[in-house]
Image 1 (tube, protein in one colour):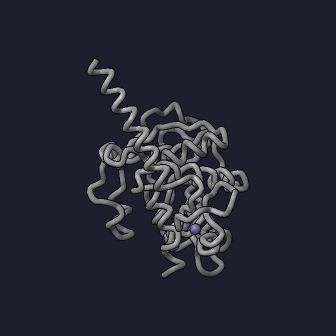
Image 2: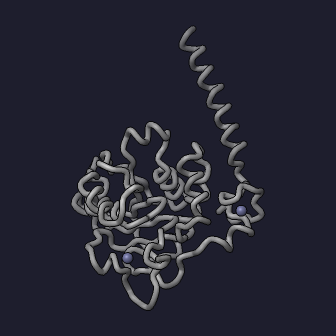
Length: 252
Ligand SMILES: [Zn+2]
Ligand SMILES: [Zn+2]
């Protein structure tokens, strides 16, 4: 009796939560401004917001994919330090116009933006030279995932896998870092992230080209560390795909 009523209460709660989520982020609202979306490509960026987002389609670092000034092949960071991934690519510059999308995804308690982002990434991937026999995502420490209820990179990855039919593997573990990455400068981020990732099951990536998905790349330190662990586990190579990348060098 008690069990049945608990189940019913939970079901009712789920229904309520879903309707709140739909109310806050209806499937046809623009991910940037929240108004009704007048575009139908599935990206949920309205025609007023689209011109404000900066696409990374020229002058980017051939290694990490960040926008750079001038006619160089590599950004200053990639010239300076070893990157463990083969190449990383991102669709948009992460700036104040793009930030609302990531905020909705991370803190809105709503998974629905990941459907649109997954579609953006799948379309981008189809036109790119990135490789992926399996796709995986940057993990979150278990305690943080418990607080938030989900890992946005995993949600995007699920959608991407559904659309591309590239099998998704969940094989990276993340320990807590000593400090929150967002609060650190460039060099501190590199140090803070070292040796915080580990592999769950090597057989899932052994001899495979792995595509690693994250929502935003800031310095590239996190995805490089993940790639290091994947390569050590026997992956053939690791390409990285994210929806946005900060333009530290370009916007300086
Ligand atoms: Zn808009
Ligand atoms: Zn670079």
